[in-house]
Image (cartoon, rainbow, N blue to C red; front, top):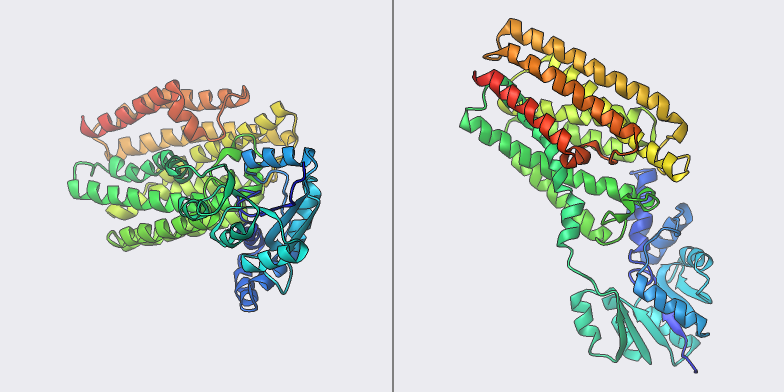
Length: 471
């Protein structure tokens, strides 16, 4: 059979993602100040911007998500002897690397430093090679090519583009876009908002939980913190795209799997960030400052701190503790030294649980190092030692905390708090035993929400704390 040459678009068609945004993320991860260079390059044109970025970044295309149904179609066409040419608006350096990685393509045409090969520019470039061609694309820029193509293939297109493309003679549609509600729910990690319940700790231990106005203010602070946390989850996942795609479970995250586009994710992050601070303004000035401190620490963690062994888990413990400080800032109370010390130690232990769980997973899968983290499987024993030590130090600090409250009479019946001691010890032992067995989820909070034993123990400790206040 005599096939016409099939020209294949790259961004959004062959790959689910857009290499321009991917490369900008890589560039900013190396140095956030590169954003100013991007703005300068853009003044010289989009083609020049793409060229300068491509010269400075390296993208690993091995795990970059492809549109699977269309990929299988191209594989079949190649076996039938059809000529496949990559026709992309991405820079020629990236196009060359993609062709080297995927040998189904015979050659490529792409943007260079002067020319952005998109829409009509791409059509002219193809028609200079052959007047009769077939084309596969996904965006509104591809409509002009569909109009002139002998065969047209629509891949992973939005509803609006699909409606316009169907006016032409489409031969086939692949990988139709699906609703993203579930993907957004997963991306925003609303289940992780349980961490923000730490904001209620100062309200609980201070005995002000019967004050409706303070409960309302703390609830508003919880919402503000949750929105900001979801915003930072998006930023963190954007910076971790390559590492997540190489991970056995994180590769299913919406951004890593390109179920959500990078532009949409950035828009959501900015919107959530803005709403969070608007809500914070209605609370205390101290809370706004703490919220800002949390944001700064999170950004430092996402860009740099998580790359350094030890510093990453200390930062995570601090981020948990900041939530308690935020709760105190809302109701205007001072946080006990013992409570802060207990928080840092127990959350340091849980952060180390997370790292040890990842290393145990590496060990079980036969790998030796983590992508994007300065850890190897040989670090497991020392991290386990630090983690278990932090656990029992937190138990000791809790004893001092209870004893201090027996003396100060902050609780109605502070001696009841001693009942928490065996439950707390049991829960921490359970977490570490599960980790050592390789039964721990990458995130101990997620594990605790699914683990019946953990839920019962944590519920019991919360009930005892409440009883100590009201009896």
